[in-house]
Length: 476
Image (cartoon, rainbow, N blue to C red; front, side):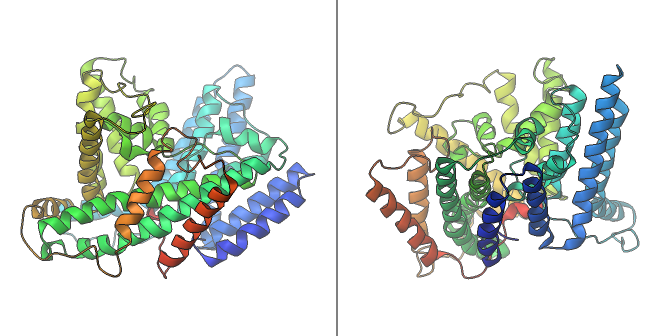
């Protein structure tokens, strides 16, 4: 079920109403969360409900086994690794098997892989809920959280519908306790959630989907266009993927607030970053910190020799790239960012910018403007690699930037509002760059606030695309 669908518009108020009617019984309320979440997920393909149930059961029982082992003076390492292996095997079969089989056939069988391929459909959001379930088992093993005996609360933790298919990837230490204790309706939190949802819908339906029309046309036949058009399309894809993914996160986090649940922030104005290290502290925060805590630090992090730091950095960026999908372009994208990140970490400059850009000032200085533009340019080059169907396509696209060809105007009747929408998004997020989220600060005057809300709703209704466009990260 898409957030930007009529079905969700009907689903959400019904679930909200029944959920709070059940507030006197925590168990029934959590059971209803699981049922609603399974309905939400099963709307795509009910067969995949067995998969998420299997993942949840394996992680729940392995957590109990590890907990019993710890009570008996053991660590339960075998149970932890068994659950990790089972979940990664499921993820590998559905997401990566055909890729490796086809690659093997290309090298050794002349590309004939018909007998090797499974042709399985990739379940929506499998990487997200698998990583969320894995983090629970690992944290129980590490002693960070205690194994829960409340199976209903655990199933709600894994399947909570707002963040089920595209994050944020939550940790058990943060989300699970919220399902284990009673919740009361918080009006201020719910209002803030609606406000964040509104901004998320604006970024998705107006910014991202409008950019997609132009981007898809150019990326479908880049050789037909000149360098200026390719540059514009690359820049617009940077805004598309940001508006699409951060928009989803805003809607998810805002929706959770309606149910008294707080999810972690997943984006923090990444295009206002002054170097690539700061960019990765602000982009897809839940995934970045997952790889940091469960891969990078266990490998030794940056507290080892220089060559080991290089190895550790390459590992997490290549894994991050491959997490996004079974294509060599994702590995190339990860390697590209690793090469940008390595000089910063080796020179101990990766933690220079822990504050907010232009903190205490309305506008940045020229140096900060230059840093942000350079970081955005480097990220945009990476997004071209990410968006490309093959590495050869990416090189051809980037090379085409310096060629002449047809110009596709952005300022046609269909797209005249897009520059204005991008400017509005950047201005609003700039003045909210140190807020709790990118639409947190509002005028104190109630009339001005509601004028702003109504104007935003009017823009969404007038300029949203007529067809439902799925979120980019559903494929991951």
